[in-house]
Length: 440
Image (cartoon, rainbow, N blue to C red; front, side, top):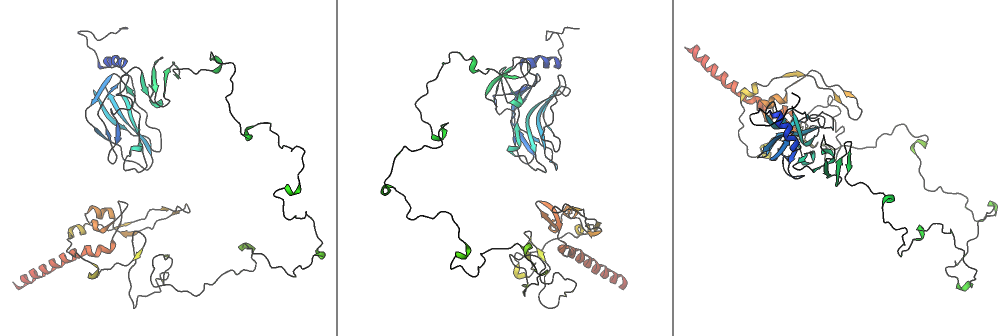
């Protein structure tokens, strides 16, 4: 059939036909005043966004939300991207839902919208800038791009003009603060520019109002103004010098009397490269180092740490080196006088026995100063901090910037104490039982 008409009584009308009919009554967009709160996307907590209640048309279909909905932006990667929050109409599912379209990593262009005439139709609500490794979305990361509808003379931004306008479509552009219309080729100003040549009733001449000019603004002014002929009495001349410097002239060296026999050089300096006969090395003057590094000292080679194989711990007080997170050297004290609130700490031997010794290779590292790759150590033996953390032994785990970083290997002996104590109790019990059996 070449001609189809609908809807009439007793006639089956499809949702596609209703959609085609209703989209002629109302354009796709959010039903609200320009900038109103309908389907407004705002920042929530973490990677969550809040979408306010609202009413909208999507290609002849209508959607209504009566409460704030929460959508979640997919986890950030190592490259920035731009996502989109959209309303998606899908006739095959008989629904319009909120959705997030994920952008391309490393691109600043948001993903394209799907807008078919009978299938899926998407309406953009906001563009979301997702930073590299971001853990939350801030208000400044959200750009609102909702188109608004509700009147045939519409309001839009330059980026949200109707995508398929008809000739003569009129609207107010909030970016340019001017009305414009679609001339079937481009968006043109509703009021055309007026040229001076076409302006009627303009005066033939303009009498300047009373005004003045700065000397610097006057053109063709003379470069000098010669005084008129006149004379001055010497006594009437002001500012005359009290003495007169003779004009430039010279003297023969032999005619100069009282000249010095020698001349001391003026203060000056020499560059290092211009100094001749300088020594190739410079022995340090006599000096010493304190026993410990103190605040403000550089780490360098401190008192014997450069020769660990030739130094032997004999008399005196020795400590293993500890480094605080700030880089400060310290000693780990353990005497009762340094502690308070002392109490038993329960350790489950079963959790300790689950720890898994492994052998592994260190990853290669990029030297940021030289740009060279430093190979990691191979065949190291130890534990994996993540596995120890999963066992619940978090007091053995070191964290940095909220992430698992290292292990307190010095506390492994403390962790093994309850295991050894439990085994000691079992050995004593078994020995007692064996003695009883032997006696029987």
